[in-house]
Length: 612
Image (cartoon, helix red, strand yellow):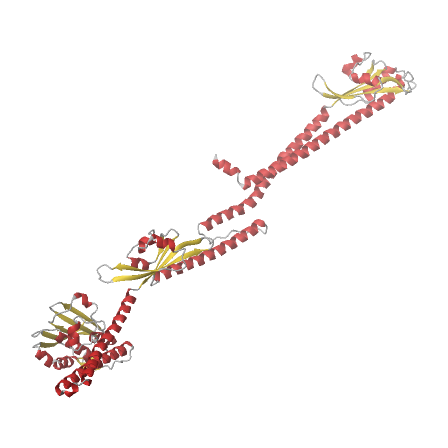
């Protein structure tokens, strides 16, 4: 049922119905007018013919009925009745018509109908005859006889010398006239049916030429809605539908280009978001996250941030989120997160920015996350470095100032006391010189102003010399030293002076923090990665776990009082790390509290420097 209703609602059916109805109405109007006019014309002609016959007969019969007949032939002895009978039966015979001639009293004198010869001598009492005998000339009427035939009746008075001497009565069948009208009706109906059929066929063809392009446009529009832009609507002409097809094809191409550009921009944005070092989170106007990049998920320790409210994600109060769109500033919140298995917190800076859309006001919020843990750590290290340098310089300067004031106040007069004060001043000065020298060395290493002077160096010899340089100090503490070099290691390419400085620092630290009677082992071995590892292992007091992560920081001391009392600046391991890094190697430290410490320096083997 619905399919039938939908079919009749199509443009094609509507166009066909409109065309057929237009032709039908036009044909009906034309047919009604034509048939009516034709019928009127035939009837008028038929009536005029009968009137002419009646008028002619009345004029001829006037003399006969006036009792002064003009004999057509002197030899002819016909009577008046016989003359009239011949006249009506031969001269004025009309097909299937009856003609009667009556005298002034209405008595029938002659009739053309052989079946009505009995009417002769009788009166015709019809109304038309009565009116004609009264002198009325226009006596016409249509009658239907007992056989159902329609007939035309005309009665004319016969006037002679302004005297009515009789009447002429004509009765003619209109069967042929109406038969002609019916035939014309049939011909017209046949033509109308043929015209309607032809109109229907032409309407179907015409509607098809209109609806087929529309159907093609509909299919193409559905394809465009589904994302298919590679098809084109055929342009079948230069009419309105053809121009519509051209415009639609142009629109499809422009839409394809626009969507392609949009997809490209979307991919660029997605690539930018995915590869940003900062985290990005976008939320809607209700505060629920709708987009987040991979970096944000890593920072927030979440696999998926979508659907989470911003206040839950960052620990913000609801009032802060509500106040954000109405404020003129862009608040920044430092977000703390404890990393699993780590003692140090991660610090994230979250910058919230409202999203403004034209005519829609604020439609959401963009949150940019920045990991400032390393930045804060470096800032803290800088502050500590400045504080440590200030402290390291202030302590000896204070001591020097105090002893110099004491000398100035009279301590120079006591020779022994003055010499001791001068010795303290000399020691503190040397300590400041060492500190400044180490800082300058670190500065040159940081700015790459201390180029390496590589040379072939005999590793066993270098390690033995290191042990010899500290033999006196180790004997004072009864520390046994052992140098062990793996077979196959002889010479390597390195900066001998700087590596000596590294090894001196490591051995010096080992002696400082190894108790009397302990043991120090200096060893060298090859590694599979074309490198050698030089280790300094002691049996000293070790380093607590909490200090291992910062042991290479500048001015960092595990035992600050003891290190300072032994003349340490807290920069030795920092310098050692920078020297090793300059060689392309690495340095690591492994320690157990009260068991000992092992420091390992890994140096890459340069070309030609593996063996001598």
